[in-house]
Length: 128
Image 1 (tube, one colour):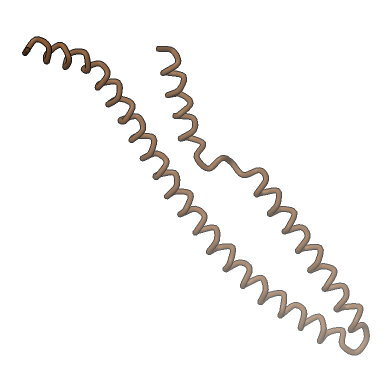
Image 2 (cartoon, rainbow, N blue to C red):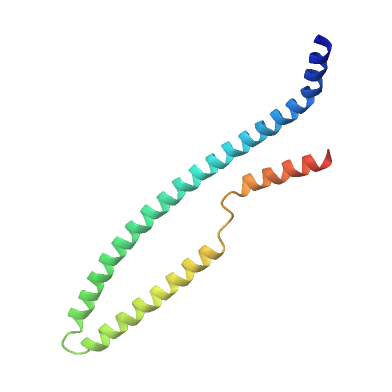
């Protein structure tokens, strides 16, 4: 009976090692995913904060510029000056919108390193 038990354990040894290796690889890959996700979150929060600060300051500057131009041309070309400022703002907004759309379309893959590691693992298991 002890021989049967030992042969069963010996037969399960390689399977257990393979399963253990697979779980170890998955654990490592999940850690990599969590690290990349944390890095991406930190980067996005930083960009979001700076973007909001820039928008707030730019809005304040545009309000001051609009008031300055309106006051400077109030007696002679008031509606033409305001129309020109409106056109400049509209063109700037269009430029920003197109740039943002381009940035979203050309964004890199979020988990690029993790996907590359999974591909290496898949190729490794195909060779065996």
